[in-house]
Length: 71
Image 1 (cartoon, helix red, strand yellow):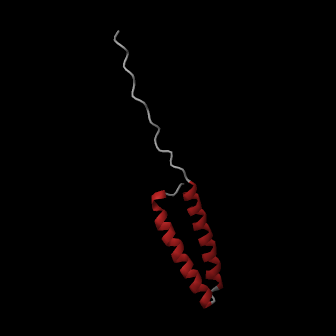
Image 2: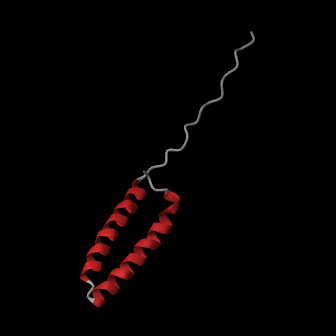
């Protein structure tokens, strides 16, 4: 399943939020939370990198059909 490239900004926001939560978990000494957040951040960054690499080729242009020459 491919993520929608139009949602890249949302994934950026999610990663920022996860990093904020990771900083808080470090401050409070929540080691289990730190590990889980690091794994989640890595997965989100991997998905973001995949979205960045996607190339949208679009629909191919189909030339109009030529009408036979009446002569």
